Image 1: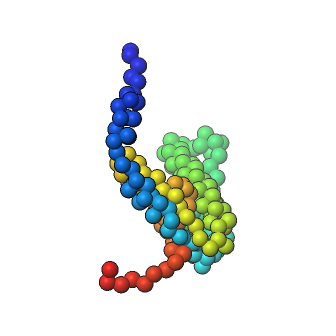
Image 2: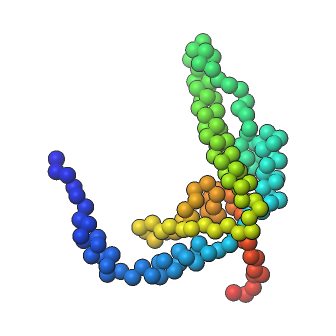
Image 3: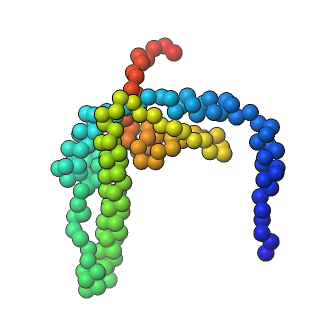
Length: 158
């Protein structure tokens, strides 16, 4: 089987013909938007977590019950399937808790900052995304609830 080697010379030829200054300007404008953490929302999210979670997008702090291998081993077939589903659900909840705690830890470290900036990246289709993965304004609802514009402006006709 022949190895496919990308034609880098052709890619460089196209890169030399294109003007990326407008793309860079757009990325600079997006990256210069000031954000800050909404402290009231962060405090409410921390409170919900402290009482056990399970409200809104705050995951439950603990599993309903722990499924052990012994429980699965001695169960009958139908019960075994239910236990395996519950075990999988517990593992998924654990992953959600880990992501949530990481997001909250990052938020807490920035809660006294006057401004946050999110650098952006553009993919090959021209879609723009913030680079920080765990806390950004395009993330899940809980992220968008914790972030607000640092400099508010009144809405008008335009």
